[in-house]
Every structure is written in C-alpha cells, then in structure tokens.
Length: 296
Ligand SMILES: [Zn+2]
Ligand SMILES: [Zn+2]
Image (tube, rainbow, N blue to C red):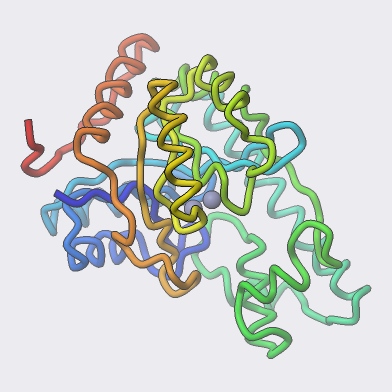
C-alpha cells in the first residue's frame, strides 16, 4: 500500500487539475493520495469524484501558510470541517494577503528593472484560487529573465531578494487551535526544509506537540538522510505521527514526482484515528475516508 500525503493542483501552484493529480496518482501506483493545495479547499470536490472514479483513497487536506517566531512555516491540515467559520476566515485572510501582495512584488521588480505586469502573471495563474509567487516566477521564466522557478526564487522572489514582499500568514499556535476546533489534524510540512528550518528545533517541536500538533512530515525531498533520521527520532520521542510525501507540483517543481516519498500505512491509520478523535471532541463530522485494503 503506497500513500502520498502532500500534493498540489492548479487551484494553487501545481500545474494540473485536481482530477488529473488524482488520476496521475493512481497511474503512479499510489493507493491513497492527499490533495493539499495552499490555503484552499477549492479542489476537494473535483478530487473526490476523480478518486471514486479511479478507485484510490483521497485524504482532504490544506497546506496552510503560517508564521512561527517570525519565520514562514507550512502546516498540513487534514480532514478539517471546511465550513468551520474560524478556518474559513483564516484561509480568506491568507488568500486576500496574497492577492494584495502581487502588485507590490511587481512594483518591487520594476524598481529592479524588470517590467512585468499583472496580465503576464494572470496568464500563468489560470484557475488558481489565488495568485502567488510561483505564478510570478513562471512569468519571469516565460519572459526569459530566468531559466526556471528555482532561479526566479533564488534571484528575485525569496526573502532578502529584490522582489520579496512579506505577506500575511496565520500564527502557527492560532492555526493549531483552529484545526482542533475544526475537528482536523495538523502535521508540520517539511519542518527542516527551506521554510521554518532554523526555528523548529527539538524544543520548539516539543512545545508544538503540546499544543496539538499531530505529526511531522519527515520524508520530504528537502530533508537529507541525516535530517530524516533526527526528525524521526524526535517524532518517536514526542509520540508524533511520521509522514512522507512528494509535495508534488506537476511540472512546477522538479524532483517531486508522485510517490517519491510515502507514508507508512500504520502511520496513516494513527493519523486517521487522531482525526476521528479530534472531530468527536470538536463536535464536527470527520469526512469519510475510503481507504483501499488498509492492512490490519
Ligand atoms: Zn510547503
Ligand atoms: Zn507543498
């Protein structure tokens, strides 16, 4: 049984539709896939129908943009009630902040001598729920300013570069409380990857576990074998669920093929049990998850 708990479609910054992500997941030999677009649940219904069609399990998720001690941190939220008002409001705040950020980034790039306008970016974002930096990166690629998204971030869009503009993200502790209220479970995405890294040491992870964090995404392309081993040990010490996933973005991010990292079925089972418990405590309904052949 192969399980991939972190993927993106074109409702955020992936390059294929939610239905296509699910179809490709089945094609890649996955039995269970989570769709975790940035700050939106907009792809869930389509993914759900596709999963029923191709006969694989779908976990509904969101990758929420958070801040922790002044750093950007990504939180994977699984199986929350998407109608829980504080969750809806928090996601809206993030999406609004992102939309307002684009004109400011374009102005900053103009200062740096690169003349890109909103239409150039809109051409790249198509059906996305919000326009984000990856779309600006794609516009820079199309313009021939850089070779690929990575170079766009390294030279222009990352913190400290000429096109970097801070935007709103949800304080992590606040988001953990919202997830509990929504009856979902939260897993820190790539805790020692490009984002978060330096502030998420063992003590911080212990504190977050005490605030309701359910798991750590240990097996991720941003983590080398040494980091994975250390994170796995910390997760074990703290009783946190260990997940692994591709962080698939279609052709938008290389080296993140569907199923390149996977989650142990026993760990998924723990996560689902915690989600059911969270929903019961919150008085919310856990969305039903159909899992093919889960080993007992
Ligand atoms: Zn992320
Ligand atoms: Zn991601």
